[in-house]
Image (cartoon, rainbow, N blue to C red; front, side, top):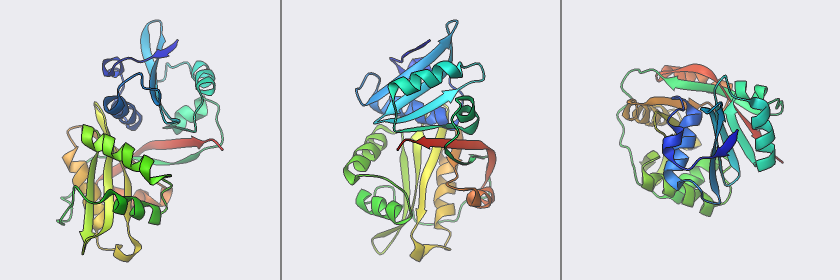
Amino acid sequence: MVSLCESLDELAFLPADPYAARITALINTYGAGQSFALFWVQKINGIPVAAVSRVDGSMTLCAGENADFEELRAFMNAAGFSSLTCSEECMKKLGIADYKTSYTVKYIGGESPKNIKISRDCDKRKIYDLLCECGFELGDYGAFLADVCARLNKGTASLAAAEENGEVKACAFALFEGIKSVLLGAVATSPSARGRGYASALVGTLAKEKSEKEVFLFCRNDSLLDFYKKIGFEAVGRWAVREME
C-alpha cells in the first residue's frame, strides 16, 4: 500500500544512498503536505519498503528489493510526473525502457583537494548563468532561485564556487543533504577557466566536508568517471532519469 508521508521520521528506514538523500532533504526543506511537494511511503505487511517524492512534478524513487514495483508503477502513473529519477535497476523493474543513465559514484576518500579560495555566498544569477553556459537545463531563473535558496537557507544544500575578478568561474553544490547521505551535483567550470583544477578542488572540498555521511554524485555522462575516480570517488551503480515530453 502507498500512503502519504506526514513526517521526516517516517523515512528513517531509507538507506544511505543518493535517492534517499534527495527525498529526505526535500521533505526537510519543504515539509510534508504542501501542494507542490508531496511524499509517499510504500508498506508491505506494515513494513516500509519504498519512498517517493514529487516536487513541482519531479519525482524521485528510493526502493528496496522487496518493493512492489507493479504497484509503484501504477501509483506513479496515476499521480503523474514530469520526470522520474531512480536507480537504473529500479527503472528496469518498473518496466520503463526510455531513459537517460550514467554512473553513480561514491566518495571513498583521497588526497586533500587543491587549496583555492572558495566563495560560499556569491551571486546566484552568476551561478545560474554559468550552469546554463555549461549545458545544464534549469528552466526559469525565478524557479531556480527559489528552490536553491530554500535549500541553502534550510541547511539541506551547500554551495562552493571559485571566482576571478568578480566573475564566477566554477561551482559545485551539495545539492541534497539528507539524513544519512548527501548528493553532490551542479558541477560546472566556465570554458575560459578549465584546466586549472577548480572543479576537482570544489568537489573534493564538499566531499570531505560532508564525509560524516555517505557522499554520492551522479556523473552527467560516462566519460566523467575517470575524473571523479582521480578525486576519491568510485562507481557504485547507475542512476536513471525518465523525462516526460
